[in-house]
Image 1 (cartoon, rainbow, N blue to C red):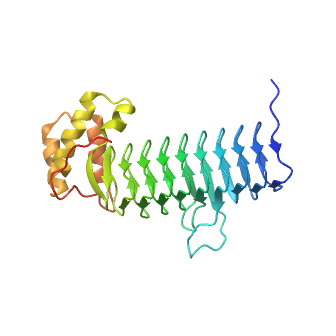
Image 2: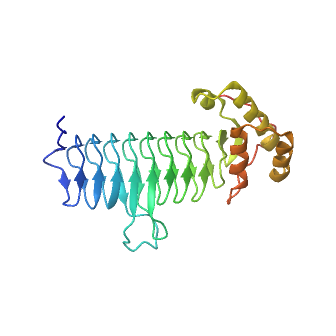
Image 3: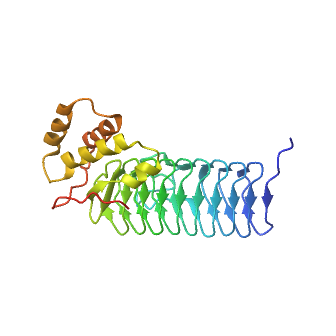
Length: 271
């Protein structure tokens, strides 16, 4: 079977080091400059800019005014060669920005199947997992990590070095300078409210697992207490499910500290 040749609009500017995979479409007024590799069947609609050393997988879609691989917003950056690595089947809506790594890093890395809504930003050296949703206006600062299937809602702010756990959910307009544990719903200022029950159901988790996580959440976050003592209490129960172990290990490995529970006893809400 013959491979499809890339299609490049005559108004696009494609540098000599750029490599375009089969079936790639580069629309009007796009600019590709530097050591850019664009995987098969990816599509740049129009006015897309991709800079630097940037590796992009297959079947990605870039909407107007997306900028990938520009310099990090780091005052120590002096033009060092740093890169962006992006997987496959991602969607970047209007105005999304993803910056290359800083002098102290190597790469900004994005996995597969993510959906970045309009004007969201991924800072230098971030690690974005797979199948996340980063909603409009969300800002993810440098060195942050976002776990698989996490959802960061509109206009959220994630501080540098913060980790957002797998299947966590940040509600709109929330902000965090602490780690958000996996499977949890967070809002306001790094406050966790409940287990992300709806997200877990949609991801195919069993009722037994969801119930176990809700019980663990109650021990850990129903009242503000010493988390080490709360974890010891959970461990004493024995026979913990892998997802509860994941929750505990995330908390124990935190360097910035994890989000607080609410000041009053939470209502286990669904969203």
